[in-house]
Image (cartoon, rainbow, N blue to C red; front, top):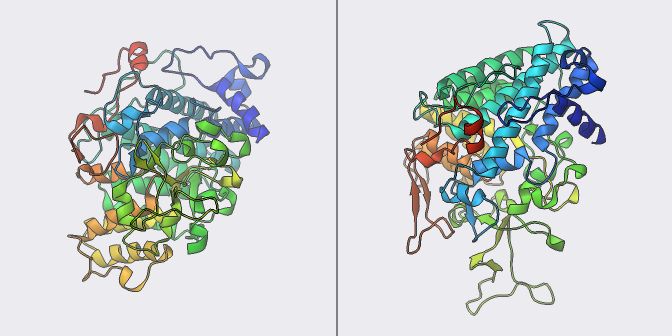
Length: 500
């Protein structure tokens, strides 16, 4: 990992902080210009690895992946905040956004830093140079598309609701003198699709899931097309991944420890942001908000919501129970203490029972270390299921849902048929519930609901509720389903228009 950190420094030398006002014009490689520094395949590979490393971050608060996963997950209905916190992500959870929120500022800044680094590499490689250089260019096109997709989801309205609304600036240039305005959501999506298709055509070197790949581009295209309601295309690209033969659903027992596995050892992961022990940010890790481990590492302030737990508890044998850790009160012998009614007692914070989430913990035995998963095969089956449900292909949709449920250890009457939806009104309802169960805490739930024009209903205890209330309902039309453009960026770029 020491190599990754050194090349990250090299890559940052190439990067132009287009929207932060920072002066990074110092030439890398002992005074060589950026163009001279990117003349060899080795330097281009180093710069590309540096672009990946920016996603990992340098530690603590300045950490792209951490802010991304929190900002995506906290506004949903799978989590419950157990009181006050010093992190301004409190505002993301409560839908009480502010314009100078450090989390969104860092997401914007580091996101566009990745884009700027990718642009430098893309610009330096001519068409058809070699298989190796095509691969490098394709990986950077993937990274550029991925970041634009992540940012437009955070700062722009959902495509399915109004693609003509403002999204984010499209940055496909390397000059310092441009201050781009926000493109529409539709324009950003078109740009993403174009980049991903080109990336897929260029990448032909099989690598592990720490890197972009042809199948990774297909997988992201499938998700993008689902958001665009291009359901047949979503199925087509999901099939490309599923039928590639490169990935397999892990078995049920392995699934219970899925998120502790190294990228190299996980046959289901398509793309994940690789972390090693040297990238352990301690309290700055994603897992620190969800879990407090032995020795006190972690904040342990955000828990699995009551509504998610109730859904999970419908089936005792569901392997996805493994990702929730109830913090039981234990006696001196380690036995669980029960109350007068024989119910297990749980530790609480500010009156909220502690149900830790461990999807971002225990890699290499480190309490809050993980390699956050961006794309995995299970999602491809669920994308295909949702798209088929919307196209009226109910049997195919149910088949894919049952595949995921069987992997979770469910069988027999715990599976669905088209004639037995177990109380659901539609096959689409079945699919969306399965997506919630399978992909919880991975940053999907808010977007699943908004994509389908459904409200976010938070009918469970947590600090999102005003005094005396039992439910918070966020309609898709609520302006706070998107975040404000960071105020510092508004001041630096007069062409930006603020969200309402």
